[in-house]
Image 1: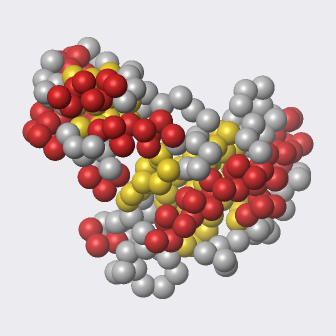
Image 2 (image 1 turned 30 degrees about the vertical axis):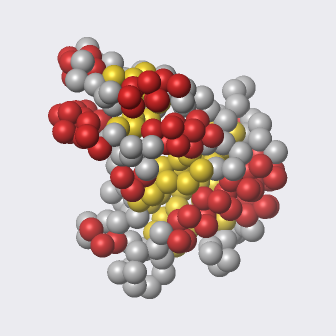
Image 3 (image 1 turned 90 degrees about the vertical axis):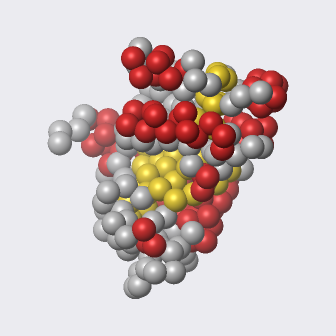
Length: 229
């Protein structure tokens, strides 16, 4: 892959053979985020799990103490009193059965997270083929299938992110924006890593965390030492 002059310049700041301490890695990632927009800082965590086995799946959610820096649009599937509760809590869209054709036939996807009350999962299940591949399907483990829609919405708006293994057993998650201070990014990264370490499946033998890389949207990857985790 060919990179531009800017990328090649900042890439020289990173020692590809080194694994940095988290604080050093964060400082480097901020320094190498030189795009004209506020880049997202992401963590890519390679695990020793085999996600083909249910007992080795890693999936959950964590509220980043300083948020993600992104405005998150929340869609809530609910009925009865829960509709009013969701609207009062600040959901961007709330509805039920009537939203299905909009999503299925009109391709409406103006939302980032979907929350559903348990009694609506029969309805939401019909959208599995659309929401599933996009990682938008509500899930009890991520706290997005719940009767407490107020807490779910508040957590999401405050900076709650979901993490899960991809097909290559890697977790990809945002930890903030390049405009965040090093301290804020450090606190977010610490909260994320504590949650992922805690989520280690007991069925995983050997090394759980193989490698951690921090990167900005357009910048080079910076390896983080896994020793302390």
